[in-house]
Length: 171
Image (cartoon, rainbow, N blue to C red):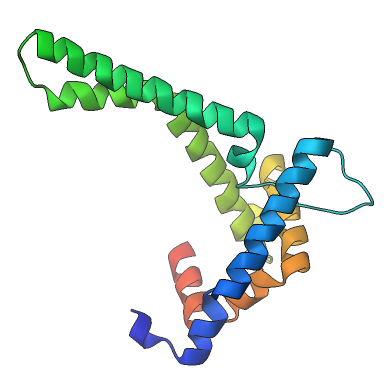
């Protein structure tokens, strides 16, 4: 638990409020740049949009559309059950799952890409994870550009306890 960490490891592993504010401001800048320039980069500046897609105008609209569809499907199922004077929690859950299936599949795809990218970063000598997936490689490049700009991946990995946990989890 948290009590297994020294104060130095805690400082190396978690962001403080000032660091979070800097990261948040950087994210807003990246989103503004992404919205105004699209995928074009100016001045050879590299920026990683991974994880920020849902905050763009299009991404935000997509999230709202998906939420609204899920809510409408659940409310329709509840309304049917009300008319039929029955309660079927499983039918409601199944309706929600069917409505959100594509979102779940996409989240799993992105998660697998991120996992491959993390393996390349944290285990650079493991040939099994290099060049398998071009999308993962692109994610690694984006993460590495963010890493060099913020220096944060080094800070996160500098905690010996956290680093041991990452290696154990990957094994």
